[in-house]
Image (cartoon, rainbow, N blue to C red; front, side, top):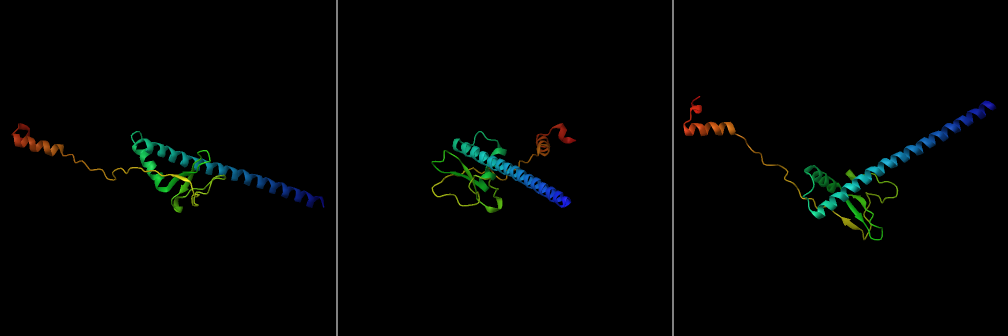
Length: 152
């Protein structure tokens, strides 16, 4: 009888330890989820502020990041909330997990919310290639002017 009791107690202890580990892992997952959500929200807000004042201070890499973020996400908030911004996904394929306490990013925005949509100017996709034919141009120039170097 004591063996059964000892076995039962040890199984219960292992189950409690497993539940505590699972709860801790869930809490760590929520921390990672919130960190990613907050990072995207802060980057979108920085892009929004930069877009209001002009795009003169951002690097090309930062502008490209803003364009990518604006393609997938939009910021919104509503009055009476104390200027808390939330992330909304434009597309379900690129939606991020939403941490507890935040409105779901893949659900419609609440009625009456203020949307902070980015208007990011598009950079030229393909820059014009410059062709450098310095040697050929120099040879033609020397030949046209009759220099001694052209006779080689």
